[in-house]
Image 1 (cartoon, helix red, strand yellow):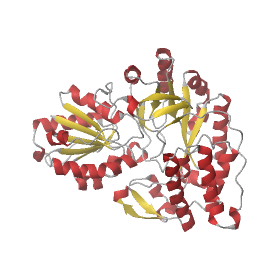
Image 2: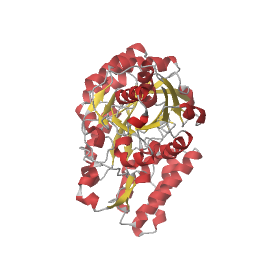
Image 3: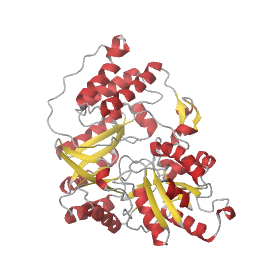
Image 4: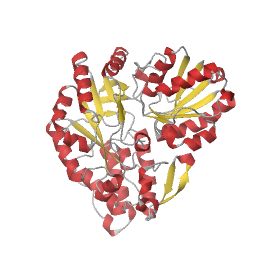
Amino acid sequence: MNVVLISTYELGRQPFGLASPAAWLRQIGARVECLDLAISPFDQALIKEADLVAFYVPMHMGTRMAVPMIKQVRQINPNAHLCCYGLYAPMNEDYLRRLGAKTILGGEFEAGLTDLAQRLTTASTSTHPHQPLPTISLARQQFLVPDRSRLPALNRYAHLVKDQDQHLTVGYTEASRGCKHTCRHCPIVPVYNGRFRVVQVETVLADIRQQVEAGAQHITFGDPDFFNGPGHAMAIVKSLHEQFPQISYDVIIKVEHLLKQAHHLKTLKETGCLFITSAVESFDERTLAIFAKNHTTTDFEAALKLCHDLDLLLVPTFVAFNPWTSLADYRHFLQELVRLKLVDQVSPIQSAIRLLIPPGSHLLALPEVKNAIGPLDEAKLSYTWRNPDPRVDQLQRDLEYMVQSCAAQNVPRREVFRRIWSRAFESVGDAAGNVPFPDLPPWSRFVPYLTEPWYC
């Protein structure tokens, strides 16, 4: 059984979603090749010999990039069994099946991929026209240590800029998947629906160990929320620090958990946590209620202070544009970034993110959302929508282009923010936009960042 696992894009990380199933499949004797197309060229020779080609689609951008590759694989090897697995596979099942995918796996996918490979080994694909496996499995798995042996070297992926002259090689792992919360806009919710599954502590630590041996100096934990299981998380970071005291790490934690688990923040700091990413999403209370974030701007400020008092960097992410964002709302967003002294901590792309509403989104249950959206654009994996104020949509398009151009030219964050401010206030041409660029506080510290910006 020749298996090719393909990833197209995963935020500049070495894909856990290739390495983990590769270990499972090799254990049953399959010959597995991993293609990370974000780093390596497309290998037609591997595709020609494949019995099973499986695309890993954990996120929006990676799924869209997979679409033309699925078509290409079908042309090269029409007899190969095509599978799509990962978070975005079940949400876009109808579309992916029309493209040629025969098997769709979401949730905990390793066991499903292994079972699929075993079935294909014992019978021709023509005798299995229908998928007997569940599209979404939340079965608890006993994970294997991911097999990263055939993936590109870690130093070819995004790295961490810890200081102006200090760049660190970054490893990536997952201590859990899914989430016990049900934020309406989140793409995890249609698949996991308020549940999460842990990767065993010893497996996580073994994965970290092999990446440290391969040169990793910093570890990114990709868990949707590191504090879904705080006891599990604390066991991992304490052991990590005991075994590798020189290794730093970063995690994702929602505002609600930062407050409820505040007593654990000191431990994060003491065990090498360099920064925490938190999906704040908005400073607009209506938007936070629609998203069901279960926090307010006041809550975020409290979490920000908790982290500041521990000298623990908190990096917020946002969905700056949605169907009900007014020009005044967006300007308020920029003013809040200034007031809260977040200009240096927020990646410029966060000021240009537009809401995605994928199939199955829990936002679709709200009348105010249903009334604001158009039809599903399958190719874009999202329902279409327009802001009632065309100036806001134009602003978003302009800012997205501007931010990407600035990133290509390595324009400093403060200068990018000044240009964003100018476009949002002065360039609109209304009386309310006559607000001068504010005086920012003196630059006090270097803010560490990953060289691949955070977005979907």
